[in-house]
Every structure is written in C-alpha cells, then in structure tokens.
Amino acid sequence: MRYELYYWPDIQGRGEFIRLALEQAGANYLDVARLPAQDGMGMPAMMDLLQNSAVPAPPFAPPFLKAGKLLIAQTANILFFLGPRLNLVPEDDASRLWANQLQLTIADLVTEVHDTHHPIAGSLYYKDQKAEAMRRARFFIAERIPKFLNYFEHLPVPKAKDAPYLIGDALSYVDLSMFQIIAGLRYAFPQAMRHQEPEYPRLLALHALVASDPRIATYLVSPRRLPFNKKGIFRHYAELDA
Amino acid sequence: MRYELYYWPDIQGRGEFIRLALEQAGANYLDVARLPAQDGMGMPAMMDLLQNSAVPAPPFAPPFLKAGKLLIAQTANILFFLGPRLNLVPEDDASRLWANQLQLTIADLVTEVHDTHHPIAGSLYYKDQKAEAMRRARFFIAERIPKFLNYFEHLPVPKAKDAPYLIGDALSYVDLSMFQIIAGLRYAFPQAMRHQEPEYPRLLALHALVASDPRIATYLVSPRRLPFNKKGIFRHYAELDA
Image (cartoon, rainbow over all chains, first blue to last red):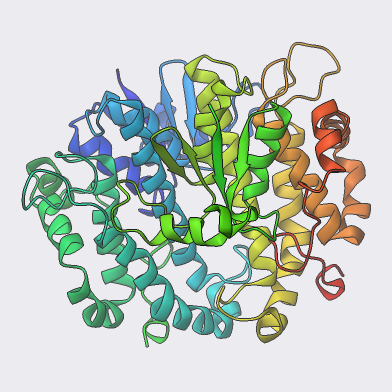
C-alpha cells in the first residue's frame, strides 16, 4: 500500500504526528503537498480534495490520508487507522481504545499549544493578539504543561522493566507523538522546559529512545523533517516563554 | 451490559454527547456522579477513579465510561466504542472511521465554543477574562460558526431521499451530537444564530428530527436532562452574542 499524506507543505504542524508514524514504520508514502504541482501533486492536489464537492467523505482540514479508496482526516483518526497497519499499536481492541484515548489527550494539548500564540483568532496575525497571547502563555506554562506532562509521566508502567513506553511493551504511535510534544515544547518554551523537565524523567527517556530509533534518527536529519518555525503549532516567541 | 457514565454532575458539558447516545438507545446506565455518595456513587466515586493510581488506564478528565472491565475516556473515543453496541453507527470500518472523523470535528468546535468564554485560562473566572472573551467571541461568530456549520450542512447527502442524516441512511451518534451543537449554539448565541440559521436548513431539520425521536423527546423533558447554565461549555452571556 502506498499512502498519500496531505498536509501544509511548510510546517510540521499536526501532519508531523502522521509523518513520524509513517517514517518509523518505513512505510511507502507521498507527502503530496510538498511534491511538484506539475506532477499533479503540490498544493493544487491538496486544495482540490479539500474543495471538491464530489469527494464522498470530505475532510474539514488537513492533515488527511489517502489509503486506497479511503480518505481519512483528523490526526488521531488517521493514527487509529494506521496503527495496526504500521505495527505501531497492540492489535487488541482494548489497547487500540487506550492508544486512541491517549492520542486524543495529546491532541487537546496540541490545541492548547496552538492557542498560546493564537488565543483570539486563527485569522489574526500573532502581533495582533500578542497581549492576549502573553497572558494565555503564562497560564499554559504554569498550569497546563505540568497538568498534561504529569499525567503522561505517571501512566502505569509497562511490564518490560525500564522501558518508558506509554502503551504495552513496544513502541507505539503514541510514543512517537509524545516525542514530538517534548521536542516541540523544548523549541517553543526552552526556559520553561529547562525548569520543568527534571520532573518528567520517563518522558525524557522516551524522547531519547525515539530519537535514537534508527529510522527516526535518519528521518530527523533528512530534508523530509521540516524545521520548527514561526508558522507552525510550536512557535518560539521569547516573550511567551517568561 | 450496564454502563457507568462519569461526568460532572451539574452541567451538560461533554458528558451530554454520551448521555444523548445512551438515552436514544434506551441503554441501561448510571450517571454515577449524580447519584448519592452514601450509595457509593456521587462525586467521591468519580474522583476516586480520577485519582486512584491503581487504575490501569486512567482518564485525564471526565467524561469517562465504565463498561465491564473497560474504563474509556475522551468523548469521541467513548462514542466510537458505544456506536456499534448502541446501533448508532453503521458497522463497517469505513463508516466507523468516517463517523469518528466527524465526531472529532465536532469536538474541535466544542473546544472553540468553550474558549469563547475562557480564552485565557480554565482556572480564571469568566469576569477575569471578559475583555478577551468578547474579542474571541466576535471572531467565533463571524468566522468559526459559519466555517463549521457550512461544512456539516454540505456533507454528501445520504441515499435515503429527504433524510438529513450525516452518515448513511439512519440515525447515528454524530447526528445526536449535531443536535446538541445546534441546541447549544442557540442557547449561547441566540442573536447570532437567528441571523445565521437560515443558511443551515439540513442541520435544522436534523435537530428537529432528533428532538422528535421518542426516546430523546422523553429524555429532554425528564430531570435527567440538565438545563443549560453558566457553568457548562455552552454559556449565554449577552455581551458575547453581539
């Protein structure tokens, strides 16, 4: 199966949670919007699927994934679908629900990260909501980062001793997403994370373990890994990291 | 199977999406936190599950559902689980993914509704973030309600002619959730909805159809249906409905 991922071509954003799963599994996939428009790819191909009223199951927004005849949107939903196919989740129903539950909790955190720099409207520039962003970011750092990371840090430990995995005894897509959360929070809020990180040894160990996975390590230094920047979800503005 | 729903006892909130599904299906369930503490129920029972470190799959927050040995959290995840058991989603995998995708899009809208009155922090009172709330609500009404509702209004029409269902040819849990969205937006933003509603005839027909479902109609006039209020997700503040 060759998967087609559709996501904004110049940011990690929510697409990155899908990319990490596809990359770790060595899946055959196209990152469509980043490919040339003259080959029928690029942004025109993505916008066509977003705006074409003949699409039977239209997405509300990127990311979305084409897998054969299926077109699937919503990050956690895409990962729910891909999990067993990429061997990135235990196959039993209870484990898949548990993985989905954790992934949706990560999605909630991601939305809160986004809203630190866009607390008023996605259609406004950051500079036009900076005062509100500074206020929201203070609460995010003081209350929400600890609330979320403490929850994940103290999830039941798997049976395999010393393994930091969040689900079962092997790497899952939830672990890959938690890697991205730690990487993103470190990029966006370096000062806050320097203070808080020592509280989360398990999550840091998980981050390091994922970073050292051979396929992920290769991916991270490849041009396929976009850098963090000031257009994505995790953004570094020094004034928000007080 | 007797289900146990755990949710804050004095608001509709996210729990209402689960209640509507259980009620429409005539399921046997307990709304645990609303039952007497002296019977082992009530808030103590809910807080115990939230704080007990021996719970193998702990929830981050309510709502959560106990179904036999399973403890499941995250609204969309609970509905994904319940859907086939309550006969509220087509059974094939593609339909279940599609339903989940739509439910997650509804969940995104619900978060945005919440943030109209809490754009800075959940830990602050509304009055302490009212200026920011007024600014966010203006954008929500002008840009986000139309964006979301137009998306749902123009989803592909099912084969059964004249049926407003969002998925397939029968009532699904997504339809019940869309009923709640329309009801909630009408409560919170009556002026804005009076202006915008004529754009969404399909969603209004769906709202009316769900309201006239015999079990839902019975539920809505029963004491089990909590009223909308100023503690929930949909809140009416006249100054936010300009």
